[in-house]
Amino acid sequence: MDPSTSTEKKKAIAIITIGMAGAGKSTFVQRINSYLHSQDPPSPPYILNLDPAVTHVPFEANIDIRDTVNYAEVMKQYNLGPNGGILTALNLFTTKFDQVLGLVEKRAETVDYVILDTPGQIEIFTWSASGAIITDAVASSIPTVVAYIIDTPRTTAPATFMSNMLYACSILYKTKLPFILVFNKTDVQPHDFALEWMQDFEQFQAALASHNGSTDSEGEPTYMNSLMNSMSLVLDEFYTNIKAVGVSSMTGDGIKEFFDAVEGEYLPDLERARALRAKTLQDAKADSMDRLMKDLDIDRAKNPQGALADRWDPNEDRDGDDDGDDGDINIVDQNEDRWPSQYIDVTRARRHEDEEINWPRPG
Picture 1 (tube, rainbow, N blue to C red):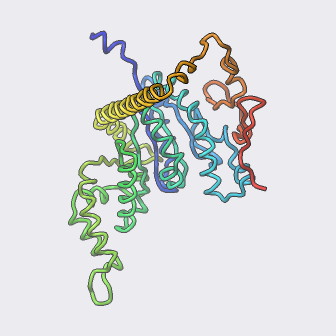
Picture 2: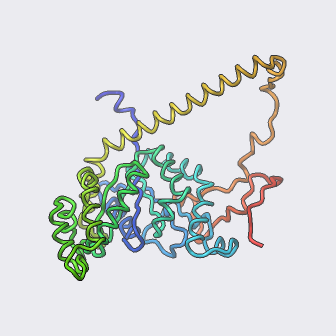
């Protein structure tokens, strides 16, 4: 055996589940969690629940946003509606995501998969700053794949199918991560029609022509009909380079095929994407350091006396170095400590007792 391979540390694969409200994201997470537990030997994943408004999840989350942020209290204190409350709670949670990432990285060498269950309102996670921060942070740490969950029974109409494909395409190009289309609820509606529409443009055209409302009173194609025909041509390359699987979160059908898609076809892409991100980050750090050193050289040339005074005693005591984090609020890892129904209001968090930081509050 090659010593270099034997000493190489194993890295988990992160799966970020994204999809429209009601597509079955949490049920899908529960099903793949059950599937991994049923393997021989069992391979339990490390699960993060990022939905602060959910009252019940059908799985045991290792890190749960509800243990850190009280969604109802956020709505009350900031005078927000349901969606604004979810977005603000996610933003507050993101301020502590360095702790989350530390826990994930620690567990990434002992588990095969890290699974993130995102909020039901897709736009809150996909197009928010906090969602982008979480996605980029996880992807820069461990190989990451996006699983876009589609409600198959609701995509049988060409218009809704096209809407889902456009949304999936936009998420793919925004995240720039390996992407899998997961047609859920195949026990209710098989996904064969969707695969045919993706692989054969004429099949989609025929379905579009036979659908009610495809022509106007004079028998001419409607504007929406022409638009969807054009968009299907635009998405042809998207269909060619994307992997689609059909699953039933209720019965478990297709779950093995999903993991085959992750491990068999996307693992090399994941490794390449991670290496590229690491190189980009390293180049950015090197560029920043070069610019900093040039600025320092210019400053020292202009002000040599100031440069001589720019010294410090390495033995000098610095306040807070030893106990700076004693009063910090910690993210709860359910594997280590579990408090039922516990949460931490991060708007009241203080690193030190004398720290003068006030979070904005209504009234």
